[in-house]
Length: 136
Image 1: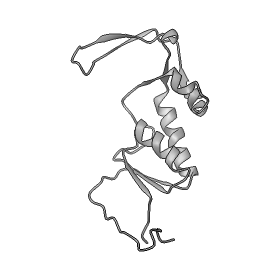
Image 2 (image 1 turned 30 degrees about the horizontal axis):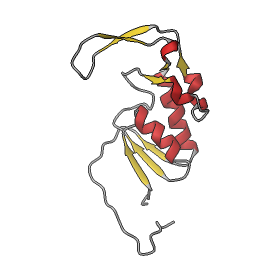
Image 3 (image 1 turned 45 degrees about the vertical axis):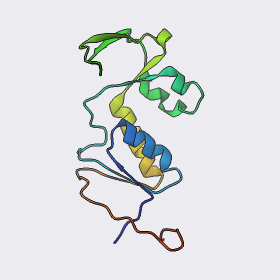
Image 4 (image 1 turned 180 degrees about the vertical axis):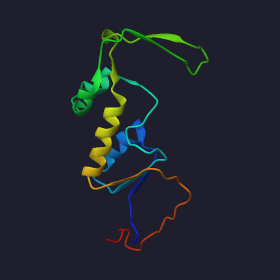
């Protein structure tokens, strides 16, 4: 049986799953990743608070926390262990990364799209349809 998708996202990390959870509201999405579990990650991250201020991201607020005043990180400029001030006054929310990945993955599935784990991308085929509609 062949499956047809409007969008294929390679990578079920924070960016891939966040985008897939939104795009899958209107399009059929396939997310592929080599990891064994959707919530598996070795990274932590934070988001600027202003990204949640307009109410559009209220659903992820339960997966965030405050209280971390500063953290150390390697930077792209090559400065190791730079201290970043992350107090709430600066407007950063830290993310419970494992929980939010599972949440976004569940949203993708609820929207009728597909997540395939323990696989890798080898090749693809794009077919142009005469009437510009994908077959049902």
